[in-house]
Image (cartoon, rainbow, N blue to C red):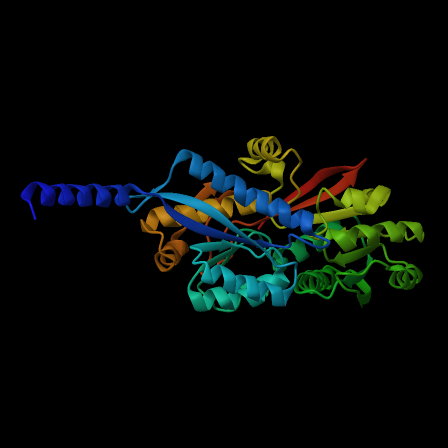
Length: 377
């Protein structure tokens, strides 16, 4: 082989290696929520938040371990179904996602969490509030919202002290989220001196609540706590009004959406609900985020977009601190997270819960969501 030709091959190889070192590494960040079914609007809201974060980070450029990194949202639909949740969790493991934002529901986050634990991939739920999610002892489970152990008591305290509720009926949708919220609310309600006149269950696909509501009407409570999502909570409130039930309808973050106004109609004005986080207007970056979101997606945000947005940035912050896109190394630095984003300061307890949680309480007036109170946890 001629010397000049050999030198040319060497030079070409060096150039190729140099180019490879500069080439983009595509890194997947998983996102899971119901993108079909009755609460698909909430899932899409969450997905939009994650997508907005990824688009911003890619636009500004990301360098990890000497490589240019391009992020990709690996979005999966669990349809709010626990079995589907484990299937899409395994798909994200197979796709080698560096971390996962999800799942949205407690009833999907909990079964999926074991899949991520076995794979050593961080899971940050943008919405799961059931305390059991982070009580399993997994090093992979985190959340950026408060828990029902905080949300239930805050809602009960507001009902007792501000609304003057003496008697309350409780209904849940038989999901991990709905039951968890109802259980925590009941404990706090009884402690605060309220009388729980009844406890009933429906399901998250129900459309007719008249039998339960007719029974409750006869019990004449001051309020009804509904543990469930807006897809059923809205019609529940609407049918309560149609039947002449005068009790206030209390709900958690699953009910506390923009779309509940459409689902409940004029009965939305009778709803008082809580969110397991700071109200958007009280978030440090809330107003600016809302403008960016509406400019990008041409619709108002629902509930969860700011939380999924920050969850993406928290995973990327961990990548930067680990100087790696390796899932195990990213997971290793998660406990030392101290990130300031749209929702405020995020740092975690040893279990993966927020150290600085807040509960916001809202009502609706003339189709508009109105902040009533913020309880710092």
